[in-house]
Length: 343
Image 1 (spheres, rainbow, N blue to C red):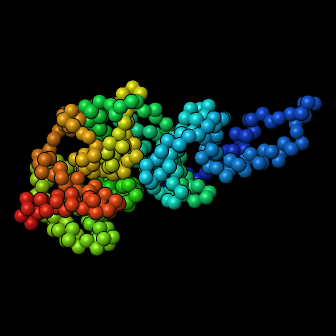
Image 2: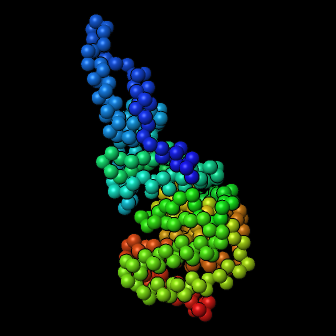
Image 3: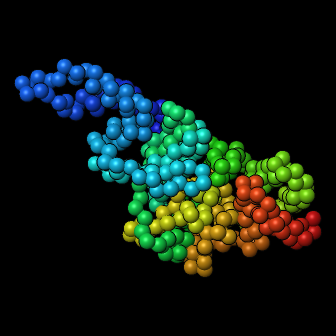
């Protein structure tokens, strides 16, 4: 963990790095050929300006750009702001958050890098995470030009399965750091047993949030009964800790200009591969997607019975994030399982 964070989210580039870059830039000269008398003060003012803006500083040093041609907002959802930086070294994608420290983006960067390293499905490569001088944080990453559609469903299913097959953990279920699902903390403490991990760090955590936030003792008590009785749902299934995107809904799925699938904005962890379909209710996965996926990662016994169990985590999270409109869906899943399991 420490080595990865140091690579992706080290402190701002040093003044010496900025000075090294600036020393290569031509300074204006007067008609006699001598440098302007203000040379030293001008250089210091440029360095100070860079130091006040760590995003520009990184782009103009480690990002290998010598000129930022312009920036424009491209939206960032309900949590972050996003901009495209156009430079002579190519475009960069930058997300900022004025309220939250760099830990959220560090988790995102580690997830992106883990998925990128599988060389399976395309994800933006993260470059830099840091703090903003005025508070908040930023992440700089590769800019991917999107195509006109979300791409081919069968290609998405196959590439996603290839990622799940390629990246397994020998530490069990969890991730190197805790991260977020939306703006909700997602606990990723390494756990040897998948059912224990999912029960404790996914369902129970969300149930406790609902109990504290809304005083919802009914959903909490029924949810706890379900947790105590879910193990039979996994009879016959082969459980392996696969690298998951973790928040795979339609807004986090696109395609590049070649039509190849792109996934972004992850909430990564190592988990049972079927948990990846927990946002399928707003992901638009169809038959072509699942057919292609299961050709690479064979369907496990009991898949259909477990499906709603993985939807439940995300319905509970939406209940906690957005309010009571999602409560009935979560409660319905819990009650159906209690009936099925005679619990």
